[in-house]
Image (cartoon, rainbow, N blue to C red; front, side):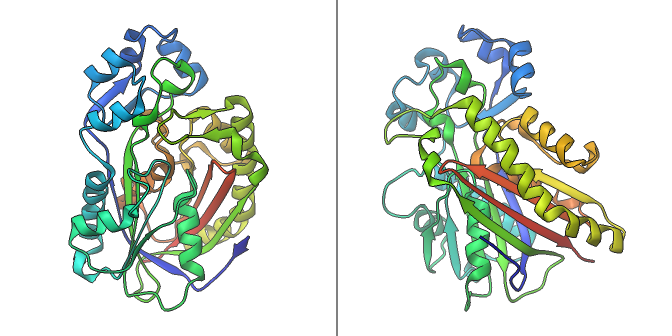
Length: 336
């Protein structure tokens, strides 16, 4: 399902990464049959951040995810608040100017109420708030839905809190090497222009594949790794190829560059997409090597990190894939 609606404007993007670092050396000390060379060869990740204390991971391997939730130094509300404050400051607005809050990702902290309501309360926002969850593709799905809505308030805050290490089994090397924690937040307006605008969105799914990636309630993350990687490469390539011609035309006409931001699942997957779509290495923006797979927060956190590097004429293609199976993509243009 694709659309080219009236553009949404991006006024500011923010991110938060917790301080505790799970580097490859730390994973080696867990004695789970992995080392730095093995990890780099398979996923290209050097480090990740976590809301969990490292001593807790070392001592328990997070055998019981309920204990992991209790041990976490930050919950989704706190990381959401911090990322949102970063985005609001960049946008130059106050929390009181936000008229709608949408949150979502892979691991909400509570079944009810909506994560958006709890984050809004932490920010002192009294406005409509609801969750829109589509796993790792939540950010793209949220923007697609916003682009189809009418009567939006002046400013909308989108928050993607992803503290997924709370549900990682650190006895399993196949998943322990992947995940890191991060939160991203984005200030959107359909009414007030800004230098970055979203001009095209798409979202789709293949529900028959829902069992390929799961996080049961009170259970660990699990996936069919090889099948999911093949799906991620194929689907991301299709999303990029659909939006790349218009992105290249815009960049060429306005003296900018194309920037690809993919789902930060693993670096080898992203590099395969770059090769297959004919992009140059310096057109590819990523942070998965430093932060791991951060779910729905991955792609917008890359945009946040590189926010000050955007120049007039740039065109951004963003593609996300996730459990469901779902996928979403965005095309953005940077003005003066």
